[in-house]
Image (cartoon, rainbow, N blue to C red; front, side, top):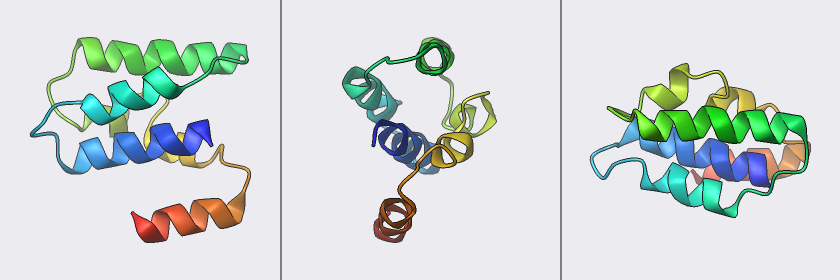
Length: 85
């Protein structure tokens, strides 16, 4: 799930940004734009990468990881991913 992938990347970067935002950058590289919402997500998170100072940006941005987690339709997948993470 592309939203789950981005959400996990943002949450992990929020937890440890010592290596920079590479996890979000990689998740965006895998992300496919299929709607205007997807475009908005890419623009928002790309702006966060451009002005990256610390991982809190992925908690505080419009398309933050909590909002992205909320877009995951497969509830079991979401539960499993959050348990594994």
